[in-house]
Image (tube, rainbow, N blue to C red; front, side):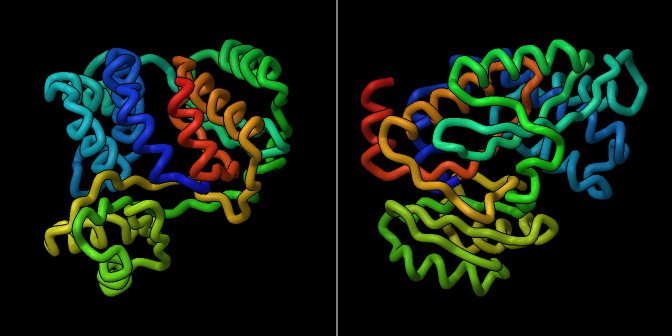
Length: 251
């Protein structure tokens, strides 16, 4: 979504991950379990598991938790019958919402999502209704600090990035999913401050929202993320700097 780096920064400042650490660890463990189930426990051979474990470590998830989650995925311990489901819907201002969930009860998950979306003036859509708006890309965010952001952007291009955006002192770097690790490694070796790196669903088109709809969309994303079965939420909502600042001040 537009303003990705600023929104990520706001969430960090609000301490969302720390406040919900138990829930965060549960979601990270689910991702590890499913990744291990699909591709095995070898980090070198399983790209998805490697990213999941890396994110868990960055979130200070205990090594024992990571090991247990991996063993559940490979069948070495009992594991719930989790399945991955993607839901599509609409939010304030007609924005598209893509929701990735892991659940052992689809009926519960759908009911929870419908309730949250309806209260926000949105609704669930049919399969394929908004998925076409998004594409899978590697997203790396670099805090430029005292460095020249335009110079950092050029370094990212030289490292293999497909596209870059400079926004509010941060550089958003976009890559093919399979190239993200290599580009991130080169940027870190160059001494740049990589604040986050992940494979994300990036919107091809963005709907810029006024302050009222922007605040409603931000609240909706937060409430969807709070649901136990939801892993990640993506939107094509665009937020102005002013809308993000006023939302942060009011939160």
